[in-house]
Length: 459
Image: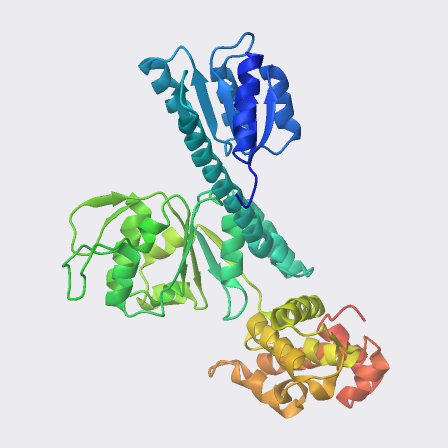
């Protein structure tokens, strides 16, 4: 076998223990044979074991007690019970409590080896699953939400508080702010982390297809339904269902989703059987659902069901101090993904990146970093290597104007733009007021007046 499983063998009959140890060693397993069950349990505290094989009738600690201890402390380790005093009642008892198998002495060598082989395969599958879960937590845990700004610290605090509950969460924010990453962080930080995380983009499918995708369908329920299909709600049973772009749901699907949230049950398309599910719903939108409720485009009862815990994600322009951290993170990650050497951004280039408005938020920043890593030949990325929209003042201005609503208060908007330009100039001038004033074409005294007017600190 490619990987030698470690078997812990427990039997108070030492001669029998030696025979079984030799049998399992010959079969290619690593074996630890211990005659005292208390010593064996202490060994489990210190060692990696794949399968426990234990006798049932032993002094001081019985095989049933060994099973109970293993299931309590190491539930992923299969336990095989063997006994010369077998009965149907005791077999049913230990199997109900979680024993992997039950063998009555005397048994054939092949019978024992087959049972141990199956237990070792199950243990290997459990170990691979645990490694996958750890990798998922490394990739999607809260520590993958990069930033030190007050805005992102608030998000992290909300995630940590909301994750242990089963309450529905509504994540709001502009496109590209990382809503799915936050949804996954909630899942992997919750008691449901070992169950599925199922994601659905409600905008990607037309209403008819989306209904079948969410609820599943019965065979023959519509043309092309050649077999029964489980929907995303069933697939997410016990875990988390992430509904992205929730504002795009049709009125009919809003009604059906409301019922699932209220009653935790639904019917497949074309079916009459009620299916119960235990799921946590996390929804996300880049639209103003409250305004959609006011206009009648979104049901108010569904909105209140979804909006139990709201996690608003700040746009990147409102957490500029996080941009250098994000750039460094993406530079390292994307260099590895693309098989290129990690490159650094010059201070001036970072200043330009920090001052940009980022209409596409983190997704756009990641794309810019990847483009620079792939196209720039040197080890340092400077301003000249940045995309035109980042370094061209006119493009930046047009980008910012395009973000503004058509209807606005002109005087208030102009003041906000002026404050934003002053903040950007300070960043690019490394917080040196004289240099910032020169960039803005105004005197230092006028700049200081504006800083006071707009309550801009950090200078």
